[in-house]
Length: 185
Length: 102
Image (tube, rainbow over all chains, first blue to last red; front, side, top):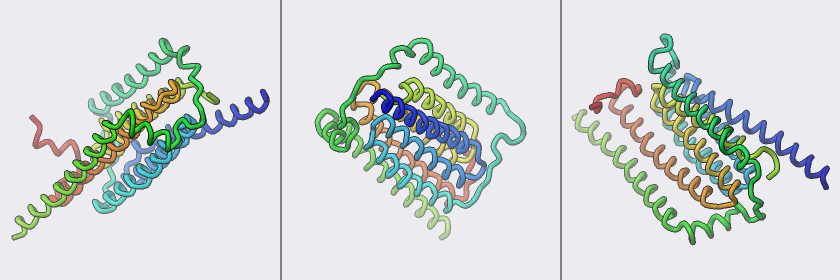
């Protein structure tokens, strides 16, 4: 029993290290690629490895929604727009590091170090042992029941936000078309 | 919980958030700025789900799903703006699109 537990723990650690490293590497790749097409493909890898991390955290429904909504729908739209706009390569950090680049690196490093220091100093002991959860934690039925009982308002507001975004997308698209027609006539 | 503790997940989330912030501040192509914004949102999502598992409470996962919906809306409007800029033959460079700057 103890042997099986430790073997499972080692397996979880291996999966975690592989998924976490893939997540970090693809995140850096998204920021550093000069071609937006490659950045979008790296972001798909980032989303997939994050879905593995969600599965390790026993959030099955969120992992499935991550793959379906992000890697399926959102990234396809991204790739479509990148193909529509055409290849525009931009060399990041060109012309030497300006004040903007230095400030950005300092700000990003400050955010990262602050979180790490706060976790390490204050919360390390409390975060070591997490609560036990049963098998239904994170399952679709459990999420659905939460959405329709405790978090009904959030569910409805989410639908309104999506509707407003769709209306905004249509208005943005049709307005520029009309302006183009006026310019051409 | 088998495997690493919640603090390791939070470290990964912090790194993702920092990387995304770097991309938003440094890159000039609005498409890559939007992609970096997605990385920031995903870092926040990972922290939410890690805390949800840590506390055995489902509110974090509900919040993560709401963040996903907001990210989809943001991509819809953002890509609409990029397509509108492209149709008006404007240069896709967030440093040059400064007409509305106060």
